[in-house]
Image 1 (cartoon, rainbow, N blue to C red):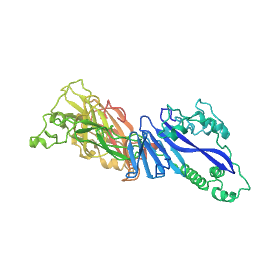
Image 2 (cartoon, one colour):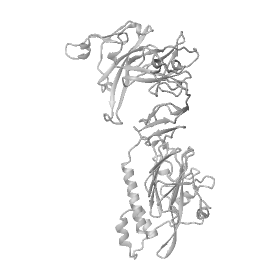
Image 3 (cartoon, one colour):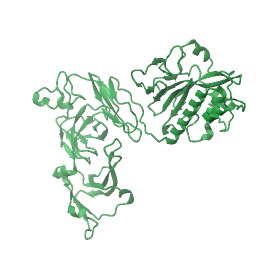
Length: 540
C-alpha cells in the first residue's frame, strides 16, 4: 500500500492438501486487485474453471474484459497488456508496474517500482528503503526481526488484511461471497514447516527437480505436486535473473486521451513520444507532441481540446474554417476571417539568431498596458514579453537548437491561454543582419590563438544601436551533443559556461586576453560569445 492512498490488495486461496495421509492447509495468490489514485480498478484472478476457458480473467471496474482481439488496453489512469493467456502486465502513471502470471492453480506476482517510491511504501512487502531489517513491518509501525518465525510472519500478514470497506475485489458469486465473508479467517492455520521423510519413495525425484531451491522444496513436500514445485522453481529463478539484470528505467507515467480528443502512442519510457489530436469541431491547446525526458517528466504543455469557433481565428491560425479562412493564403484570396489580423500575428523583425534574446514587435494590433504577455515557442519554450509605450506587444526569442521557421504563440493572460500565433525565423549566427551581427576582429587570429607567434588581445565588435542599454554582458557558451547520433537518445544542448564581462560599456567593442579553458569547460569543442542586455541574469 502506498502512502499517497493508492492500494493494491492480494487475495489468498486456502488449499486443503493431503501429505503422507495427514491433512494440512496452504495458502496462495488467487486474485490481485490494484488501483492508483482515481484510476480504473484492475483485478486479475484465476477464473471459475466451470465458467471460463481462460487461464486468467481480467476485470476492469468489476467487469470482465477480453484480450482476444487486442493485446493491450489504454484505460483511465492505467495501461494493461496481455500477450498470452497466462500473463498480464499492468502499468500506472507513476511508473509502478505489476506482472501477474498463472502457475498451474496459483498466481505468481512481481511488483516493479521506480526510485520515486523509496521511503513511500508500506504493507505486506514492507518499506522500500534498501533496509532489509524493517521489511516485516506491522500496520502500527512496529517491526519484526528479519529472523522471525513463520508463525510470527503469519500474524504479521493478518494485521494487513483488507476490510469489506477497503477491498477492491469483485465478489460476483456465492462461492466468493461465502469464502471471503471473513477477510482473515482466525481459524485457518497453514502449514508452517515442510518435513522431509527419508522413506518417501519420491525423495530422489524431488532432489532432481528442486535441487537447492527452498521454495520448490516447500511446495513439493507440502503438496506432492511436482508440476507446481517446478513452476515455483522456474518463477523464482526468473525473479532472481530479473533482479540481477535490473537497470534503472526512466518512466514519465501514463498519459490518457485529452477530453474530446485522441492520442497516438502507448509507451511511456524515456525517449518515447505521444501525439495528440482533437475530434472534429475542437482545437488543440497545448503541445501536439510530448516526449518523455530523462528527468521523468513529459515535455511541452499538457494537451487540451477546446470547442472551436467556425468563424474566428482565435487559436486557429493556419486553418481553413467552414465559414472563412485563417490560412496565410486568405489575404490574396479575400477569404480571411474578420479577426485574422488580431490572432494571426505579423512581426518585425521576423528573424534572429538561434542563440535567442532578440526583441520583436507584434504589428497591426495594440493592447492595453495591463495585460501580461507570455510568448511560447515550439509549444514548450516560454519567454516573458511586454507592452511598450505605443501599446504594441513584444516577444523575446529564446535559445533554440535549430534553424528554420519556428511556430510561436502569444498569451495575454500570463500563460493561461495562447490564442495568438505566428512564425519566428531562427537563423545561424552568420545569417543575421549586419546590425545584429558581432564581428571577430582578425578572425584568423581567433582561430589560431595559442599557436606560436599568435598571442595578445582578441577583439569583438558589434553595432551599439542594437541595444538600448548603456552597458551589456558578454558571455561564453558551449555546445555539445550526447547520445547515439540519429537515435532517440541523441540530444543537443547549448550550455552557459561563464561571463567574460558584466556591465561592459555598450561601446561596440570589447578586447580581452584569453586564458586556457578550465577543466569543466575543456570538453566543449564548439562555443559562442553572446552579448546580452545588462538586465539579463547570467545564462538567461
